[in-house]
Length: 227
Figure 1 (spheres, helix red, strand yellow):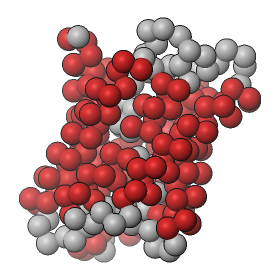
Figure 2 (figure 1 turned 60 degrees about the horizontal axis):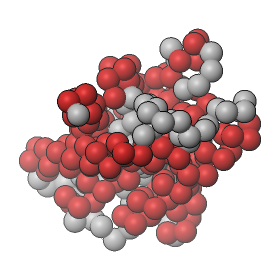
Figure 3 (figure 1 turned 90 degrees about the vertical axis):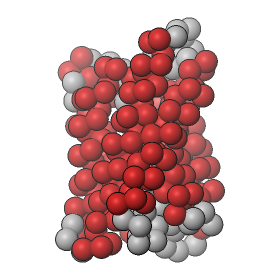
Figure 4 (figure 1 turned 60 degrees about the vertical axis):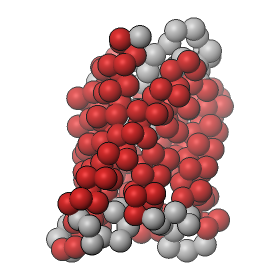
């Protein structure tokens, strides 16, 4: 139980840092225009990269309820720990959004993800974005050791890439906790359902895809597995 508490604290801390830096970059860009869209996308990619290497051996550095659920569906994460992990991630995200509200009370969205076009368009994009992210996580966290040491680089690059090209349309969330917290704290909740449902669906469909393209037994239910 003590180990689980430490891991959950690491998840909360990691999610706090990620949301504070990533959503903070959006808020700063809105206020100053200094970062530009590529700068915001780079911030998301770099903070995830740094956190994977900082906390990966502590909690797995999921920092994303969709990723946690995807790992559980793949048999790589114990179902008994799914709710504690997701709870920790949500707490960390809300703490970050609360601090951003204190620092930037005049900002309207606090970095909330909002669709620029039709809701179905953003929903489909978020499904595809999360599917690719989850598939990459599943593929690079099993196999040769030289793949393991590059996990942070690959995941950070994917986050930055997807934020770069899809951010202007959907906000490129791929993460229910990252979208829920600023939406609730800022009051911009009209489209939050997209960013809760689409990432979970995208992560779920990545699991059977991984089983198709990877070696047999890559994604199987195993008791006591950890991220």
